[in-house]
Each structure stands twice: as C-alpha cells, then as structure tokens.
Length: 450
Image 1 (cartoon, rainbow, N blue to C red):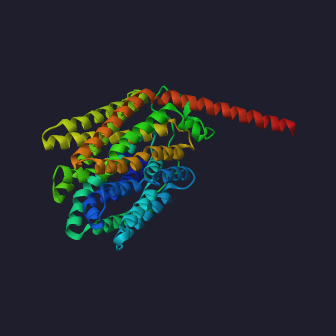
Image 2: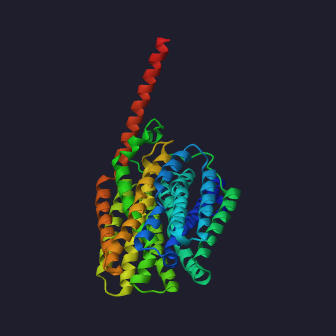
Image 3: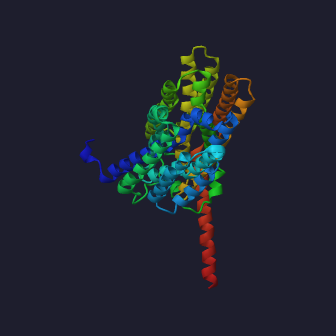
C-alpha cells in the first residue's frame, strides 16, 4: 500500500499512537530516574534500603486510586485534556527534588514521588483508551504493545543519558531534564493531539463472538465486568508482570552496582538490557497476536495462552539466573525473565477492551491498572526490608528474586486456567440484554398505568 492510499483518519490514528508512545517514553523515564540516581540520593540523604524501598513504593501509593478515577473520568471527559493535565503535573512533581533536602530529605523525596505517582497512575489506561478509540479490535493488541514499548524504550533511551548527566552535573540535574521533556511533550500534544471523532466498532476479530455481544450498552455495571474470570485472570497476570517491573525500576540499578560490582557509567548501559528485552517482547507479542487473530485463532489462545506461557517461562528464567555461574549469563537470564514478563500488561489491556461494553471501557481499564499496580507498592518496599534483614546484599537479592519467580509462575498457571474472553463476553451480552428487557418492560408498565 502506498502512502497516498492511506486514509487521512488512518494517518491521524497512527500519528496519535506515535504521540502517545512519546507520552509513555517520558512516563517511564520519570519512573526510572529515581532508580538511576538511587546511589547518590541514598548517600546524600543517608537512607537505608528499607527507607529507599518505601520511597520507591510511595510512587504507587495513590497510583491505583488515580488510575481508577482517571479511567472513569476518561469515559466522560476528552482524553486530550486529561493527558495534558497529567503531563503538566509530572513536570511540577520533579521540582521539589531541587529544594535543599536537609533533615527532611526523606519526606521531600517521598512527597515528590507520591505526587508523581498520582499524576502517572491514569497514564497507561487513559493513553490506551485514547488510542483504542482510533483502532478496531484486531489492531488493539499491536497498539497496546506499541504504547507499552514506551516503558522499556523510555528507560533504554534515558538510562545512559541520565546516568551521564548524574555523573557530570549531579543527580538533581536528571530531574530537571525530565521536567523539561514533560513540558515539551505538552506543547506538541496541544498542537497535534486529538480525540477520535467516532470510536471504532467494538467487533472482535474472534468470530466465535457474535456481533450482538459487542453491542451491549453501558447497562452492564462495572462490578459485573470485574467479576469475570477473564478480568480476574488478566489482572493477576498483570500484577505478576508489574511486580517484576517494579523491581526493574527500583532495584536493578542497585543490584548491578552493589552485587555485580559495575561502575555508574557501565551500569547505565546494563540497566537498558532488561528494558531492551522488554521492548522486543512487546513487538513480537503484538505482531504474533494480530497475525493469529487474523487467521481466526480464538483470543483465548492468542491472548490467554500466550500470557500464561510467557509468565511461566519468565519465572523459570529468573530461577535459572540464580543458578548461573558467569556474570554475563546471569545478567542475560535475569534480564529476559524480568523484561519479558511485562507482556502480560498490554495483553490484559486488550482483554479488558474485548470484554467491555461501550461506555465501560475506560473504567474497566482504570480498575485493571489500579489493581495490578498494587504490586508496585508492595514489591519495592518488601525488597528493601529483605535487603536490610539479609546478611548481605547478594543474599537479600537472591531471596527477592526467588519470591519474584514464584509469583510469575503462580500467575502464569492461574491466567491459563481463568482467561476465557469469548465465554465472558457472551455472558455479559446476555446480562445486558436481560437488563434492557427488564427496563423496557418496566417503562411499558408505567405508560400503561398512565
């Protein structure tokens, strides 16, 4: 297909996807900057591993609540301006890090991360909601994967540069840099960003789902959707993937420097390795799912089974890294295990959109992000406590990685057993039809009484 044959709406759709990818790049670079600057910050303020773990977890304190609120609001307010508001707050949230920290350094850094987390909580569900409105169901795995690639690419692109900035100009300069990038994105998005004039049809590529199931309106309450086995399986898989992701954000830079003994400049490049594997896995998963669904393979296989197998493999790789002898092999296995586990998150986003009736997608995506992101509260803080209680940093990280591997494998098994979008979608459609008939009958009785 030549470029001239692509419709203007299609071009606009991919432009929006590109801008939202940049949005996610900055989003995760903002998250990662704390881990990259962790050593100098801990030394400057005198933080223990437990205190640093609490700061890293503090980012997610309001993350879940904000994700739910942002998701529900996105069903009622134009996504364009929600995204602008979030990005502006991101930039403002970096500024407290520039103040003299003194005796209150722990609380200043913690407060800054809590504010940043509150603003970034709705980012992924709202970005997906904004993008999904421009694309049909068959493309949403790929689009969600592209947006999720913003997470690893944000770190891959930012880690070496931010590490150099920290070494050359101090750790505060890294936070100033991220604040400026956030404001630049806001200016570009205001100029080119746009909400879809007409959301794409919700018809699934899975032909086992009749069209009537995708026309069920917002008569289905949120709690009914959140009680489906598909949503529960997806959110548990996302929880496991995010557990590994939180370790990557908060602790992998410290692991590479304190346990494996790499210097700051080399560590900046090494940190990019698991995120690079994560980016590749997102691309492969998105293209594979899209190809299989075009061939008529059910989403229970293309989304459910793929999630299950990926998490089982990732858990096995984490355990294998602990037994590996050469340092390079340990890095590769651990990077693969942690990095690839994040594919559960975009698949879960697509599953939420697949089972959600029109008018409920934003709220369901917000609830999904809110629950799986709880892993971000628990994982960094618990890892910090484990490190402080262990005899050495190496022993502490071994215990933390064992726990991570167990969670990944358990979630892989559960996801394989629970995820069944066709069945749940049909059940929701029948419930919506029943409620619609009941309301119609009730209104008929009222008219007859009159």
